[in-house]
Length: 257
Image (cartoon, rainbow, N blue to C red; front, top):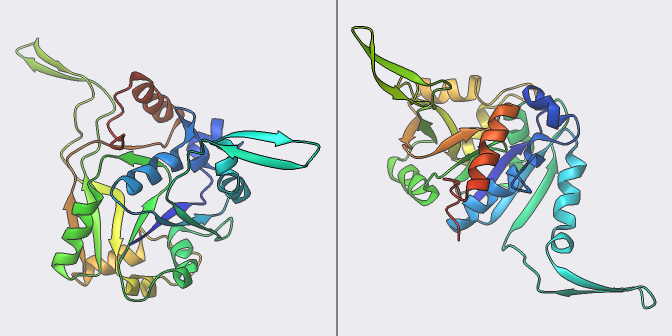
């Protein structure tokens, strides 16, 4: 199965970083968050990616074009004008990088990469700004059992503030960043049948509006619940929290060896 990653947005809520680079290239532990997402897919055996580019997309192209160079020891012989690579640390990835336009909405980006998708098999779709320890094999298996056009991963977002459990004025318990109000939200990991693209009108269509709404209305959208770790990197605070988790050596989304 191919994995489509939306990586073209402006990332205005994290402008402290995104004014210099596209949001998926903002680093966690010295690696772009896009790399972390792709490592999750690769851990479960999904290594064929289509990345939808937009804002500063050339930076993503340059990153992958020079991936081996940046991840290997090498000897540069200036006299012979040659480069010899040693101890390369490459990934088993096939990465298709598609310029889907600087202003295109999420649905429009998916529609633009449709020619690169097989016409007869489902594919993953996710965003380039969130990490999780989602079991992608289980998600794909669930999708194949129900026969509908789309599956969305449902998650309970974490609360942003500590909570007080108060009884008669006395604090019985303090809970640091408990789950939210138990409402489930779109966790951003989809499995879709190819015909879903037909529900997208064009560049101006957000995937989260008319396409998903029509899928739900037609009974073609199923939910797969993920109760593990999930985090979106929307703000600098989110980025710093993920950075701290990575630095601790206990990043929950690092399921790979």
